[in-house]
Image 1 (cartoon, rainbow, N blue to C red):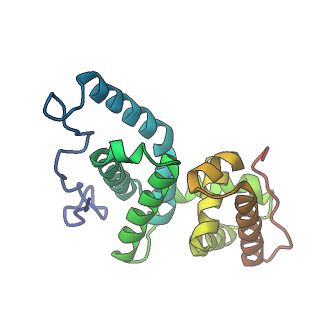
Image 2: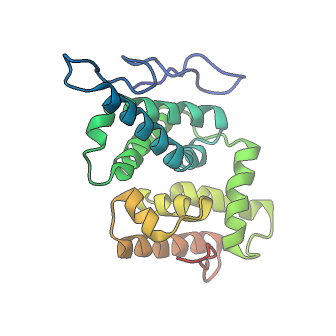
Length: 216
């Protein structure tokens, strides 16, 4: 799935996703010649819809944080859903479909960021991300400059650490859920989170950034 960045929407970067074969919804063969019974196709439709409803907020949080605006983040999420739809029966055979989908989302986001100018973050996006981290920083953000430094530090985290930070603090997910998303052991998620907090604390010039995300 590729994305057309040429057609701008409301003055923002990006445009509409290029239609892939079969459209943006699930498209799998049906009928006697395919060996797939109609009720099986219906079940695939339902599982795909439920999967996207459950996991799309995480893909959107990732895209929004790294890309910086709602319009382009929506394009990337749409591309992820289209790719999943095209191979949905195969995705279901993975041990952790959510981990496969997260890797797919990360690849789309990375491709988008690599092909664009430095991120220009919308005010509403900046406020949403920083608002979530104010619960973690516990009064350590004293100025807009501190907030800008924190946002930049999040973007500069290594991929593994940035992933757990977004899932933990923007979405408030339990580490066991994060481990399933990322296909990593829970202990590794704890380690990634600890190292990420240490990096962010150093960037803010404080001794420690506590885990303010609630129950682990």
